[in-house]
Amino acid sequence: MWIRALKAARVAAGVSQDGLAEKINWSASTIAAIETGRRKPTFAFATEADTALDTGGLLTELLDRAERQRTPAWFLAWRKQEAQAKRLRTFELTVIPGLLQTEEYARAVIAGGRLHKPAKAEELVRVRMERQELLTRDDPPECIFIIDETALSRPVGDHAILDRQLQHLQEVAKLPNVRIHILPIGVGAHAALGGGFAIAQLPDLDPIAYLENATKGQVADDEETIDLLNRQWDSLLGDAASTSASLSIIAKYRLTP
Picture 1 (cartoon, rainbow, N blue to C red):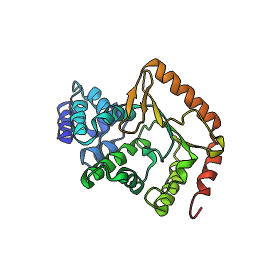
Picture 2 (picture 1 turned 90 degrees about the horizontal axis):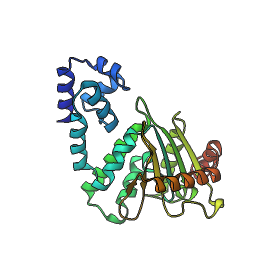
Picture 3 (picture 1 turned 45 degrees about the vertical axis):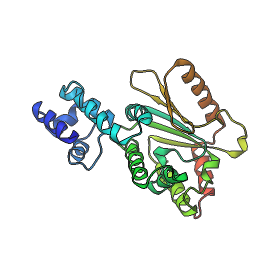
Picture 4 (picture 1 turned 120 degrees about the vertical axis):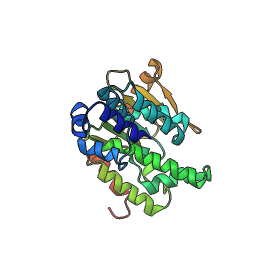
């Protein structure tokens, strides 16, 4: 339905795929992949296409409806902000951040504790994998990750799955828009022992944050919370290893460095 709406809006506006690419920050090949179903649309793409094609927000609204059927309601608000961010800063305390997880690692995390039926778990895995497209899209955000060293040794799934996950970290770290910092165990008590969080810097808007807890996440944009998280982030980054030293720490935990 969404793809048909995009094509109809583009044709009604008399705009080709190449023409649409000239109006927005997405290549013609990406637009073609979205229109053929080979690539999932993001909220950032939908928003830009709405503006370029003068649809009155129709594409964003339709995508929102579709995502509400697939994504937990409490997470949808953050996913929309994450997709539109120009800069993402993420700290994770116990596991590898979702945007950096391999499919098998994500499946092991989501299936942990058997809280979801198999079909639901697989749908959540697909949603998580789709989110990762923002790392390599045409206009990707700057992404900075701080990961507590303890997450590198937790055998999520099994040791082989963990090893492939660590290899993936080494590969993703090569992307020009991605920085990975490891917070060494030797730091001891640090500013965010209470849990992970993420801060998204949106175009021409104030930052918005996502806070993790035991049941569901919370999106926050109030000045007091953002200020506290910024101070936590600065403290964590000051204690974290450099990007090159962080890669050495990751290699230390590999089965085959």
